[in-house]
Image (cartoon, rainbow, N blue to C red; front, side, top):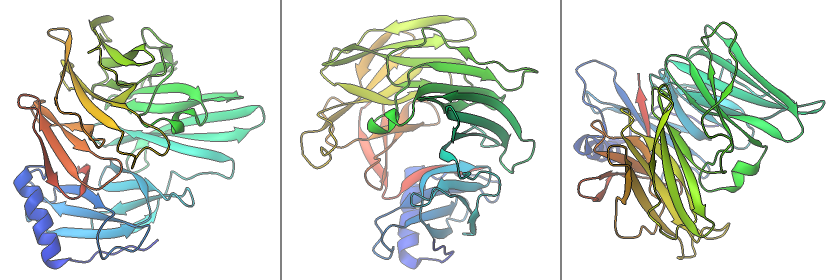
Length: 368
C-alpha cells in the first residue's frame, strides 16, 4: 500500500471548484468540515490504487492518499476500507495518514468482515464470519468510532450455510441484520435480503426479532436513518416488476404500492427518506456476468410516495449505465447517484427527473 498527502495543483483546484459549485461539498462556518471523494482513473495514479480526496469545505483545500481499497466508509474522522488482496482492514485520516485498523481485523479463521455505521458516524457495528467446528459463526460487535465502549451484541451459529449480514445501525443502537447463505449475495448486482431482523443493542439482554412479513423474497430493502421505517421490495413475477411495502415499524402498519408493471427483472439500492415518506430504488434488466460492456443492459429509477401509496418512474428515458441511489439531498427532493463501475457523482431531482453529473470523483461522505 502506498499513501501520500500531496497537493495536486490545478487538477485539485478544478476538481474542488466543481464540487463546491455542485453543492455536494457542504459549506460550513465550523472549521475542518471535510467531504471525502475517491477516484480510480487519474492519469497519475498507479494501477490498482485508489486516490482518496479530503476536501476542506471552508477553504477548498484538498489532501490526498493513494491506497489499495474497497468498501470505503466514513467512520468518525477517518475513512475505513478493506484491502481486496489481503482482506486487511485499513483506515486513512484527513491528513493522509494510513494505518491498519486498530480494532477491526480478520482472524485466521475469518472468512469475511462486514460493517455498518450509524448516521452520525459515531458508532460502528461489524461482523466477523468465522469458520469453526460445525460451520459458520458470525460474531457482531458494537463500538464507538474510536474503539471505546466495545460490546459483543450477537453471536449467530455455528450453521452449516447461513451467516448474519449487517444491514443498518441507528444512533440509538438499533441493529438490523439479515440471515442468508454464505456467498449467495455476492452473485447479485444489487444487495438482496432473505430474512431481516432487528436487535436493540441497548437492551439489558438483547434478542433478535424478525421484522414484519419476514422471511420474504430474496429482494432489496432499505431503512430510514432512525430505523423507524422499513421499505421492502416484493417481486411480482420472474419477468419483472416490484411492489413496495413501506412499514412504520413502531406502529406496525404498512403502506403498499403496486408495481409499475415494467419488465425489469432485478431491483435494489433502496433508500428510505429520513421522514419515512419516500422510497427510491433502482431496477435493471439484461444483467449477466459479462453484460457490463454488452450494450444490452438497461436501468431505471422508481419513486414510491407513502402519501399516495403509488410508484412512478423518476426518469422516463432508459439509463444505459447503473446510476444507483446513494444518499438523499438535504430536503429529500432528490438523491445523489453513484455508478459502481466508474468514477463520478450525479444527482437527480424528482420534480424534473433531470440527471446531472456534479463531480468526476465518487462521493464517500462527510467527516464529522
